[in-house]
Amino acid sequence: MRQSDLRILVVIGRTERQTGLANLIMKSVNPKLHAIYMDSLASARVQLEKSPFDAVLFELDLPDSKGMETLAKIQEKAPRMAMIVLADNIDEATMDRASSMGAQNFLVLGHYDDFSLSKVVLCSIEKKNMEEMNKTLKVVNSILRHDILNNFTVISGSLEIFKMKRDEKFLASAMNGVERSIDLIKKMKEVEKVISPNEMKKMDVRGLIDDIVNKYPRDKIHFTVEGAGIAFADDALISVFENIINNAIIHSGTDIVNVSIRPVPTDPDLVEIRFADHGVGIPNEIKAKIFQEGFRYGKSGQSGLGLYIVKKVLERYGATISVEDNKPKGSVFVIIIKSG
Image 1 (tube, rainbow, N blue to C red):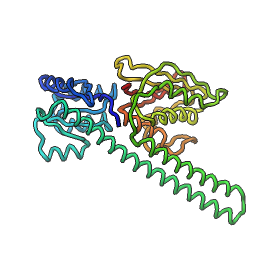
Image 2: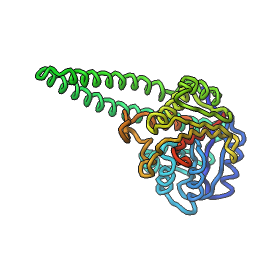
Image 3: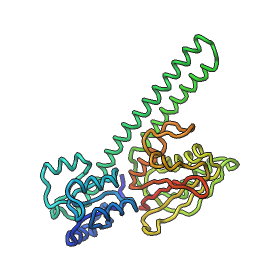
Image 4: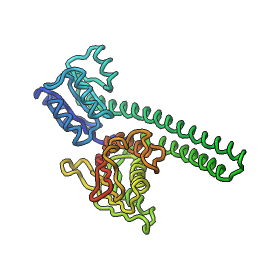
């Protein structure tokens, strides 16, 4: 996998330590590290809400937080981000506990150079990606097994009733169950392809979206696409855009989708992509749930995998996705992703 420059959040309480680490980060290559520095847990948590990072390097003891509480609070804000603990020294018990709480790696202050620092960050990110990919596959397999077993129960019951009543509608019900199971198996193949890392490269966001929207009948769905930008991703980004657009059309009932692409004003290394529909909208009480595994809502709810997979793929890129209300009605899905 070709690696882009990496964005890291560094949280160190003492200025002289920040300065020493900053000098090494400036020299880093293969991959090049770009850091934002914070001196407290509170400021770090605010920064994690503002923009995506590939990893967080932090001391356990900060002015406003001590020990494992620091790790727990950072993980609360960035549960799927690689975490690297910085310390004067780390005993085995601390390492074991930090690892069990989700830390990917450790650095002893003063015992690394710019080369080893870059490699530790990269290895930590790759380790976190593998952990998340394994979790995702387990969840997806569980969902698919559950849904296919349910379909087989419907098929079996429908065929039994058909044998007794010879009513063709029960055959149709059985066939629907077969077709749903086939669709789920196809979905599994798509999922495996989507969450498996491929070569990362610079991708033309506008070109990808134009190709997708051109597949829809113009007399039924009206699209507007504005702006342009580059995203550092792999081919799974196409599936991300397709899932978001399909979700807007199928679940919201909209016949209008507006897409805008622009650099993030406060950070030119990031691109913002907004997908706005004019459908029924998403109730506030479920906004936080729609990216969860297996979550279904309304009559059109299907496998509950689409938006979950979207989020997992974007996390692999160090990107974020959120949803907000459109005005006067509808929803807006917002992606923030690195441009390279």
